[in-house]
Image (cartoon, rainbow, N blue to C red; front, side, top):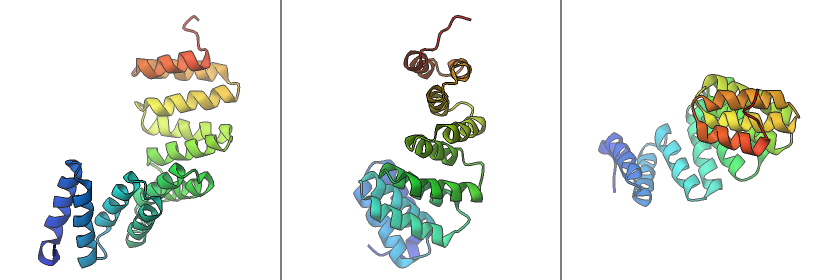
Length: 190
């Protein structure tokens, strides 16, 4: 495959292949794009996603690092690095990357959520609760932020706040609300 005059088209073809779950071919297309245009930030990010899905975490981080270098103001690249680090169990390093993403753009609800997950994993529940609250504020219909917030509040012994979160989530996702009710002993009775 050669891509010089067709780089943009080949990138979008890679996107199509990826949507069709033809990931090996998509990865090959993106690699041709980056070989011909090493500054194609989106292709590097796409390579990172595909490699992360394959469990090739170090290579995925390297691709996301390349994307971050090409666009230092791209919060998504920092988030993606944090996400892969988190999947590897490297929570302190993930926290650093989620914080970098939030320094670039404090509206990235996924970064607040990821930050909360890593903090909770490290047993820092009070800090985690604050991060989950912000994730829920930015994306009010995210039941997972609500569940994690209820979990952190439960671990902190803040049962009234668990009940408040249960009621909030119940308004838009009864299944997750039921999970909160069962796991954390929330009662529907006043």
